[in-house]
Image (cartoon, rainbow, N blue to C red; front, top):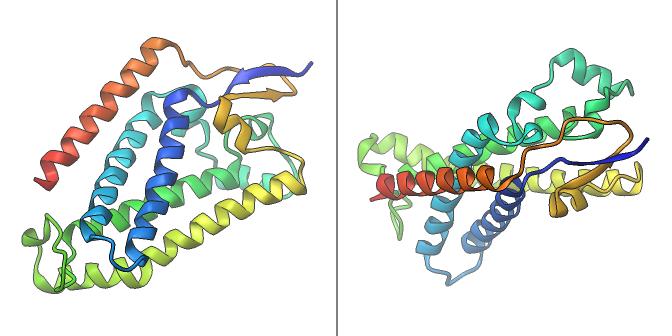
Length: 218
């Protein structure tokens, strides 16, 4: 019998949409002429705090938000590609979605990290620039502008393309569960914990991550 389960807890949903807004904002502030570079930096700091939170929430968050729930083996991924789906693939992140999540986390972390030590020799010097050699800072700046931002763009396009593919070809709405949290599945399965105490914990973790980033950039 089909059943409705809480897949994405509220902290995960807020993280998802806030990160999306910050990433799009960071791209806009990098490309739109006349926008103060400080806004680009602030969005980068916000992304760093969000990434730190997601790493922690990937350990203590709701069941389907934990990395352990979508850390698939190569064999499981290959089986999925051949059409042999495990029931869990239809609840949280499937193997391809999991690869997308990890790729986004790594690419964004590299983008933020290089931004922290960058020096464009015009308007911006990263807050951690003084701790690295000049040659490394210039290399980080080159990566940030010439490679990193386009990797971010590529992952965003792939993400949107995957949503469109699953909506049109698989008749599976991936957006709705990330908005309301619940998803109808064909079999009974574990729900993600999403009670008030969990949300308070998430808020405390996010505040700690934001404080750590504030301390770092100051």
